[in-house]
Length: 373
Image (cartoon, rainbow, N blue to C red):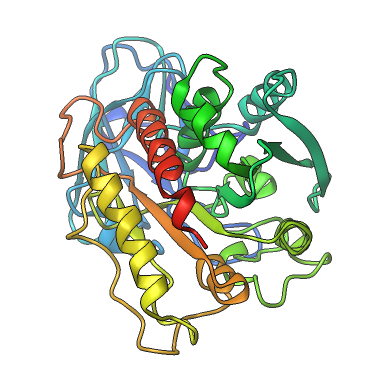
């Protein structure tokens, strides 16, 4: 007998009918207090060597339907190694076909990063002599918001990830970034920390992550649309980070995300803010060109359309920070799909590639530090 469940950290699925392995009918649940949905993560038990056809019936109503084009779901037997499986979208349903080799198999939108792993990882990093840890406050569900500080240089660099909980690639990127930063024998990280003071929030949206949300926190707020008017009642995660930024100042800001539709890594600038000028343009172009030199996984052709002059949305972190502190402020987007640049037919864009990509960013940050002001 096949059983399907998602009652675990980060899980999301509603079982409609699992009686026939060749016609399993499922639906993705929306965020608990909002209508966003696309993230799914569930376990199938008792399916070894049985051809499964899993139909996600409400895929046509998902938040980003364009994300299903040329998309392949990920699967894992152990929760650590995630590989791509046959997936198709017919305009209404997302169909996942797979014949598992073992009884227990997990399926997800992208390699999950549970909050249990996050808390263990943060606890381990607290012991690093490179980092100073502090809890900024608590989420609405009572989880500690971890903040790390490193270095004593004059430039204030801020890096955050996972404002949108379903974009788990942000957490895998953070692991790569923090692992390199805390390697006391790494010349690049030592160079960076001589020039800057780093401020790092590894996971902004812990509540949404644990609840299996795509985009919102426990109050149903999209944190990346809350930066102008954040409150402790609805978006304490943003409010607390923003207030710490007021104390430290900001010379550089990188907000790490994932994009459903675009099958490549790219940076989004704050172009369109009222104060955008040649200096903003020069700093962004310099960072982009350096990253293009150092990373074979980066490109600059695909990305978001630029906002009209003065029309940038200042509720978005990238634009809010750029306008408030007149600094280099960017959003990094990574794909849920495989990247068209350097595609990998087995794993697609993956946790391992996120980690490596993060470490390539660090080298660019060290080079650009001197021109931030």
